[in-house]
Structure formats: structure tokens, C-alpha cells
Image (cartoon, rainbow, N blue to C red; front, side, top):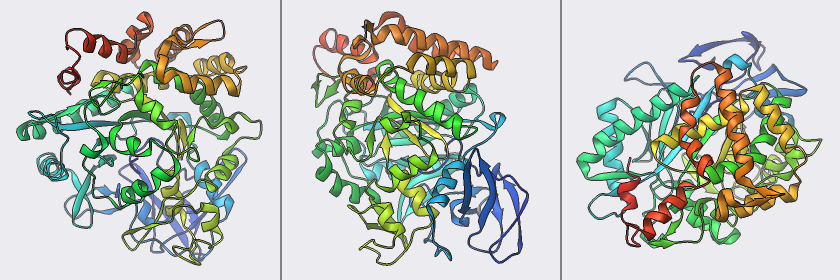
Length: 526
């Protein structure tokens, strides 16, 4: 859920000089490879961008880019709180501004990047209890001091770290998340993961802390999970039970790995969005790794995926409208405008706006801040509170996989890069899935968490489709020319045998583990 350091996060600025609101020329410069406005005004209007047929006209507040650190010459962007005090827009946002925000993610193929995020559970090695916030604070401070990360604070609490375009953030139950930098190759991605795990382990092991790569907390109940001191999570915690039975489990007991990928145009976004949604159940099956709840098998291979089916139907799911002929940036904006809000961030505080929509906000009708209108920071923050299987921001997020051990953290981006960043493989996927019905896609989404690759589909099993898909991913990586196909070895074994990681854990549980989940903490220890 972190707000920064994702692939595709730089602005898509087409001209070196444009006009500011006062008519003055405004120059743009590059700071640490992040394109940022250099100006005195708080915000400007960009009207020289284009992405297919979408008109791009938007306000880019300085605070969304960052500020100079006194300690060294780097850009800091708060992961949470998401921005500094909100700007007061001199002109109201229009729907076209929101469309333009999404369209500004378009970039030429040579600028496409790979942004990988992963979450993991920290625990005390002696007791297997989760880390308390005080231990997490000690860990964050230790990493900061030893490896030169900037601290991200909420009030007087440390709640994250930032270094270049990477950030470390805390999920609601203390899950430790790395949001990686936008990188060119999978070799760089895997090196980043390895470096992160080395740094975390170097500090954590001295504290008697380990980290577990799994999709769902295997041993403890909700009441045993500590709550992190982040304002947005308190609002979510109060709201979740009103809209679904499993939202608190999602917040406090799940971990995922995801990859964020770029698009070149509105048409390219649509093709990748459709391919990603159609194949997301296959990714869920290949990476299924959450078969235990409170010490026992839970009847699912991916309990994490199952939890999303009853978290909040207003903001989750397979988004069937993405397959409509009319779909594009504007249609996604229409969807997001009507997703209920969680909060607005003002004066360094989260204000509860649950039950109202961003469309209400655009009309100045939020009771929590009556008469106030949103800015693009508010829109960016709102987009982070929408959780479909594939999410659109200024890039596309593939969200269907369970957290797992480090080799799978490299395999997940390899899978999607091979499919979506290669034109031949992408078109092959679209051809393969073009006649899948909305009902079939929904069926796969609902059944895969339980039956994995053995889910029946048409005249065979999902396993057989996964074999074809994996070959397309491998071929796509080979055509990229970076010798990256080896990163798929971890999932190649799953496809060869049809046995998911979760089924291997269940075999161990019923065999040499003697029906105890405790050994999983050693089996999947980073």
C-alpha cells in the first residue's frame, strides 16, 4: 500500500518549458532521475501532455515530488503520511484532470521499468510471536543508521524509510514492505531484493527477529496481531467490518508480492490490463502459499486470495468493465470516483471520510471538510485505497500473488515482464483469452484460491493453460535479450508438477512436521 517508489511513477512531461498559471515560464529539471518541476509557485497546470486521445491537463504539486535532505543530496518522498499539508487549488479539479493524471503515466518502451513490492511477517525467533511496534521502530532505526536510509515519520513515530527510489513501509499488522525502485532488468530487481534482505537480516538477527515469506499469518489470531500507529489504518480498521467479514484479516494477517509495470499509450494500457486480469488467477495458483490459519489447514491454497473475496466489494475484484469496448482511462476514473473514500489528509492528520465518494468531494460535499475541494494529492491517495486484482495508477499493478521466499520474489516480476513487456507474448495472451467470458473469469477468481492449478476450466484444468502461459513468459524474456528466463525456474517446477507451494507445505504438515505449523517459520525463513 505504499505510495512511492513504483515503476512508472515519474511524470510524463513532453516539453522542457511550459507556462505556469501566472503566465511565467516554468522550467523542468531532472533530480535523481525523477522529473520534477523547478518553480516558486505551489502548483502549475500542464497542458502539453498527450497519451493517445486522452487530454492531459493537471496540477502537479511540488509536495508530490519531495524535498531536499539536509543530510545529503537526495529526494525524500513521504511514504505515509502521503503528502505535506494539502495545497489549496486556485482552480477546481475537473474529471479531465483526473483522466490526465492517469494518462501522464504513458512512456515510450525504452523508458519502461519494473517496480517490485513485497511484504513479509516479522517474528520473534524464540516465541514465534509477531514483532511489536517498539521492536519494529528499533529495527527501522537500526537500518537507517547502519545503511543510510532516511526516516519517514508520522508525528513522533517512525513508520518507514526512504533511500533513493526505494521505500520501506509498515502494513497495518506490522508487515514489513519493500517498495522497490523502478528498474530496467530483472537482474537489478533481484539484486535489490537480495540487498534489502541482507540489510534487514543484519539488524534483525541481532534482535532475535526473523522474517517469514508466506501469504497469511499461519499461527496467530487477529487478537494477537499488534496494530501499527498509522492514522489511515485506524480509519480502515473501523470501516472494514461494515463492508465485509474478512477485511481485518486482509489488513493484519496477509502478505503479498506484486509487480508494477508501465504502458506506452491508452491502447497499450487496455491490452495489458485485460491480459493481467484474465491471467491473474493463474498467478494466484502458481504462487499460492497460504494454507494455514491459526495453526491448522484452512481448506485453501491461497487464503490470502480468498480473503479479498469478502473484504469490500466496492473496491476489489476482477473489474469486468475493463473488457468493455468503451474502456479507457476515463472509464477507470468513473469507477474510482464512485469507490467510497477512506480519508482525506489535512494538516498532518487523517480525516475520516468513509461512506462518501470522490465524486462527492469534487462537488465540495464532504461533511468531514465541508465546501473543500480536492487536489491531485487527494486523487493519488484515493487511488491507493482501491484494491482490484489489477490496479491502475500511472502504471499497472499485478496484485494476485501470495508472499513467499526470496526466489519467488524474483519469479513474480519475471512472469509478468515476460508476458506484458514482449509484444508477441502479450498478443498471444490476448488471443488466448479473447473468448473467455466474464462468468469464466469470475469462476476462476473464486475457485483458484481453493483448488489452484487443478481448477477445472472448459475441457481441461487451469494447469494446462498455465503450461502454455509459462512458455509465453519464458519466450518473452528470451526475446528481451537480458538472459532473464532463469528467474522463472521457481515457477517452472510448479507448472511441471502441477503442485503449488501451498500443497507442498500441506504435505510437510501432514508428514514430517507432525501436524504442527511451527516448522513453517524455519522452512520459509528469509
